[in-house]
Length: 105
Image 1 (cartoon, rainbow, N blue to C red):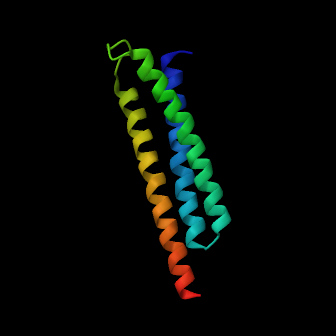
Image 2 (cartoon, rainbow, N blue to C red):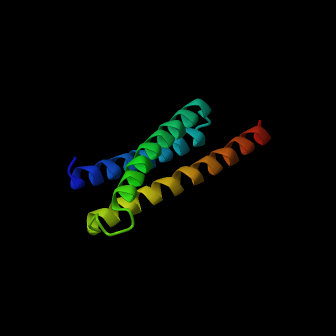
């Protein structure tokens, strides 16, 4: 596959992961725990795909600069790192929502 297509696939999966993480937070705010867990799982699945693409690119590059680093590549990496952080934070915030819900019930 052409490099640009691979990078776009990374961006798409990272974007899906971030969107699913935010959806999980919306479910948690409404105390819809199954929805939150399902959205977190979808986020995890998308991150796994994006991370696999990233790992493939890294191994193809072999640390030798075989893959050109351009703005779209940097953008893709930025998306992935933000998606990973967003998912981790969503998990922690959902945990807090559950604790608050149990205290208030």
